[in-house]
Length: 209
Image (cartoon, rainbow, N blue to C red; front, side, top):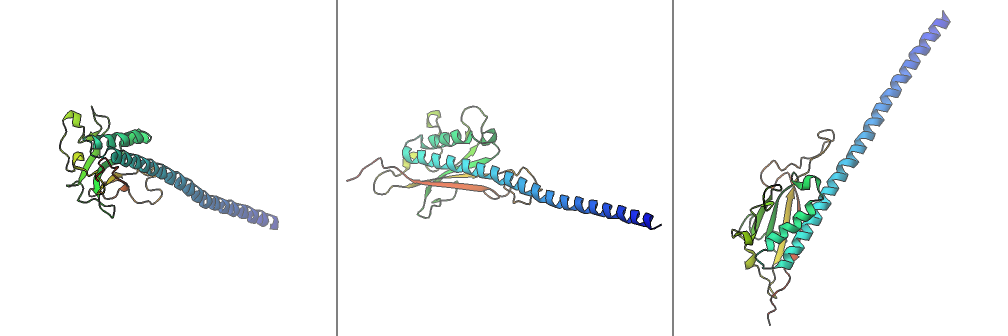
């Protein structure tokens, strides 16, 4: 009888130990998978942000060099577009719009965007011709800039500061598995988005005495 009781007790103890082991494995595995997905999520987000940042810096640098050329914005967007090719699907589901603006001393647009000193372009790759709407190509007859490139001050000593601001989204691959704030740009224009800004002083093209 005692042997039977001992066998039953041993069986129950082994079942308890197995249950404890499974519970511990579940907890540890959950933490490990959360860390793994977190690393992947933030790695992809960092990649997108770094790519957008480099694209924005490059675009603003081109804009500062083009100065008051009529095709300045067109060249800015072409520079931006060449960098966006490194993003998945050329960034068509990431980049929402790009603002080219005259910056204040605080680095902010001198007017609202779009506004008198800010041109806004929506990224629409895949269509015929230019991948931006509106397409600021003066050779194609475009002349609808709120902030006309030809009006930009490139004379010393009052050089303007040109800003390029990229507004973009990011899709989390794990969905709701890891609670992360939405970056889907589905709210009011410019909300629930990430933004990157680059500022460059216009390169002088007119040297006044």
